[in-house]
Each structure stands twice: as structure tokens, then as C-alpha cells.
Image (cartoon, rainbow over all chains, first blue to last red):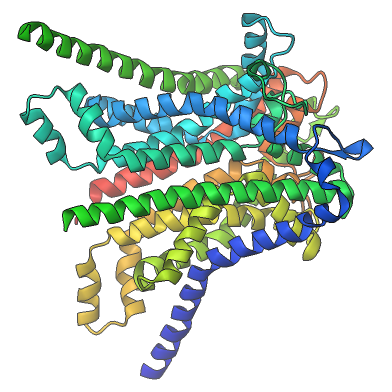
Amino acid sequence: MEKTLNWREFVITRLVRASGYSAIVFVALIFFFLLREGLPTFAEVPLSTLFSLRWYPIEDYFGILPLITGSIMVTLGATLVAVPFGIGTAIYISEIAPRWMREILKPMVELLGGLPSVVLGFLGILILSPFLRTFLDLPTGLTAFTGSLLLGGIAVPTVVSIAEDALDSVPRSYREGAWALGATRWQTIWRVTLPAASSGVLTAVMLGVGRTIGETMTVMMVTGNAPVLAITPGSLFSPVRTMTATIAAEMGEVANGSVHYHTLFFIGMVLFIISLIVNVAASSVVFRSKKRAERVLS
Amino acid sequence: MMKHLRLNRHLTERLGFVGLTLMALVTVAPIVAVVIYILAQGVPAISWEFLTGLPRDGMRAGGILPAIVGTFYLTIGTAIFSVPLGIAAAIYLSEYAPENSLTRLIRIAIINLAGIPSVVYGLFGMGLFVLFLKFGTSILAASLTLSIMTLPVIISTAEEALRAVPQSFRTVSISLGGTRWQGIQRIVLPQALPGILTGVILGLERAAGETAPILFTGAAFFLPRLPNSPFDATMALPYHLFVISTQVPEMPPQIQYGTALVLMAFVLGMNLIATTIRSRARARRQW
């Protein structure tokens, strides 16, 4: 009895530990497969073509600059929507809202986080883009701006939940101290609570931006998918095409192992590296500020 | 002077609060509007035939049964792989992992898995499961891809639930002569179960609504029958909604709204179950 128990314990402990390590294995596997299929691009497509302004794979134009600028344009627009509304809502929920209001708002925001992006894209096509077309008098409603609005909505729940956590974890004594000194609640929010939570709020913004860069379906459905260079403010109101949408739209139709196939994997590799940088940076902000807090408190 | 300043401060506060309240309302109002609108437009499309029939006339008529069943299969398939692995990983992180750089690496890896764009998961799944392991475009390949995507959600919520169980529970179990694993299995896991369940459902909810990871790993454009093995491709609700709202000309809006409603009901239903479990468990918790 004793013997079998020990043996079972041994096996289970090993299995549990292996599962713990699996996350590292998966990240490594993903990176490996992206490299394996994406790196041949450097041999097949001259750099001058890769960083040119024309994406037209049928005629062997593999310029990814329009796709990169498209992604940046849509992400910037979405950030401008998601950051103020996300942080504003987080402050409202954590600092101002009465309890019953909080109980309503939090599940609502979670609900938005759970809505499939394809549903938002669908409504974007049917409702938002025709509205924007007539309202702003544009030739087409499928623009970077339409994508930005919807993506902003998709990033809001991420920003709200992380920023609200950060605000919540500011000790109550900080606020009480400020009130005791005669500060209004408004002054307390801006000069005490928000600065104390700043690293968490920064993380919220970064992860929100990360979420936006990687979003695929909504963007593919509502931004018009025109691979043109998007660097002027005017191109916010014209069709663009992002990196994610390009992969999603074209991967289904390419031959395995072709130049086009490798280039799409190369774009995936770029996206992977961007998300790696954003996430490591976001988590190191938290890590560093925790260390600082420990130093201050000890 | 003093009085003037004071009034000003309070006026600023009043205005600021009104501003933030409006902002929160502007953020939430569209969500409510979206849900109500899809309900209103979609309900007339729902009929017995729509839910249990096969698509006809180039998907412009008939039902969406293959897509409903497909999404169901994909969700189950994802659960088979990601639930045991995710919970085991959470147990490791909460109960066994030492505070060292390897554990920190695991945590960074989990954060990164959570941040990888869904379409990149699709590429990876196609590279590894469809082509390298030769599973083909199949339910199996798509489920495996979705499982890796949902893993970080399950791990982090399950770990949080495990950590919330007071340390004294473990100490008592060991003091009574139980082994470490017995303590986890009989004391810690049952106590953390509602929290773990919430995390699992939230993770699967995300998998059920995703389109990009299954685009090239298992989704079929049009398949007027039910899949009969894990190696079959399948229709799925999110991909079907994408197809009928962008790829099929002259699609009757009723079918589009009906499909959107079924997908939304599927996903938000899971969300509702998860939040109910969470709030019930919180109310009943004794520690």
C-alpha cells in the first residue's frame, strides 16, 4: 500500500511538472514553426521588394510596408478610442460609481469582452460602415476609421479590467490621507490614486494595444482590404489592409511552400515578435514597479 | 478669494464626475445596443428548421445545423486537450513551483501565449498539425490549435482559484498524514473547483467564438452534412457568419442575423453560466 502510494505520487508529480513546463514548449514550438516557414522568405524575396510599397502577390510584388502601415494606422486609431474610454470607465467603476452601478457595469464590460469579433465585424459591415459612409460623405464606409472604432471597442474590456484592478489595489489609506488633507475626491483621483496605479494602468494600455494589433476578423471585414500605403491622416478615412487580415484572407488560397506562402508566414513571424515585445515589456513594467513598491515598503 | 477657489474645486469635481459617468455610459451603451439589436433582428429567423436543418440553395436558405454541431464538436475537442493540461499546469504553478528563474520563464511564456494574435495560432496550427503531423484540415487539428490558444486563460484563472484556498487547509492535510498530492486532490482541488470551472468555461467561450485559428486548420466553407470523424473538416458558427456576411452575394439578412444570434447565444450563454458559478461560489464560501 505504502509503496504504490509513493509510486503514484511520483508519477503524478512528474506529470504536473511537465504540464507546467508545457507553456514554454508551446511558445518555443510556435516560434520554431513560424521561423521554419517564414525565414525562407529572405532567400526568395529580395529585401528591396520586401520593403517596397506594393503588395500584389499574383505578380510577385511582396512589399509589406503597406500592410505594416495599415496595421499601425488602425492600431493608433483604436488606441485613441480605447485608452480614454477604457481608463475613464475604469476610474468611474473603481472610484465613483455607487455599488449597484458597479454591479451592472462590470458584467457589461465582461460581456463585450466575450462577444465574438466576427459578430462585431458583421454589424460593422451592415450598420456602422453604411452609417459612416453617409454621415462623413465617404466613397466607401469600409475604412481604417471604421476598423479603429470597432477595434477600440474590442480593446476596451482589456483596458478596463486591468486598469480597474490596478486602481483597486491602491491602498485605501492613500485616498484617506488625501481627503484628510482637504483634497476633493476629484483631486485625489488625479494626484494620488492614478499616479499610484500608474504602472498597472500602463500595463493595461500596452495589453490593449497588443490585443488591437493582433485582431483579425473584425479588421478583415470592415477595413476594405486595400493594400495601399497609409501614412497621411487622410488615409484614416480610406480603405487599408492590416498584416493580420492579409494572412487570414490569403493563406487559404496559396500553394504550400510557395513564395507567397513563405511571405505570409514571415508576416506571422513579425506579428509574433511584436506581441512578444509588447507582452514582455508590459509584464516587466509590473515586475519593476512591484520591486520598487517592495523597496519603498521595506 | 478662498471662497472662489473652493467653489471652483467643487465645480471641477462635479463636472469631472459627470464627464466620467458619461464616458462609462458611452462605453457600455453600444454593448447593450448590439445585444438588443441582434436579438430583435435574429429572433424572427429562428425556427425549428433553421436550427435543425441543413443549408440549402448556396446557404441562402435552410438551416445551420452543421455549423452548430461543428462549433459544439470544436468546443468539446478543445476542452479534451486544454482542460486537463491547463489545470495540471495551474496546480504546478500554485502548489509545486519554486520561486526561481525557470518558474518566471513559465509565467512569461503564459503571458506571451495569451498575447499571440489568433491568426498566428492559425498559422502555427496549420504548420504543425495540418501539414507536419498530417492531420489534414480537420476537427482534430482545429481543436488542438484552439486548445493551445485557450491554455493561458485556463492556467491563470485556475491558478488564481487554487491560490485563494487558505494555506492552513494544506497544512492540516499534511499534519493528518496525507501526502502532498492527497492534500491537493482531496482538499485543495474541491475547494477551488468553482473558480477553476469559471476559468475553464471562459476559456472555452473564447475558443467557441474564434474564427481566425480555425480558418486554415479545420473550418469548411460549405459542408451540407455532419462531420463523422475527428479527421473531417467542419462548418463552425463564427466562420459561417463570416462566410455569409462577406463571401456570399445576395444573402438574405434574416439568415445572417439568425446565425449571429445563435453564435451570440452560444457564447454569452457560456459566459452567463461561468459568472453564475462564480457568484454562487463566492456567496457560499466559508473561508
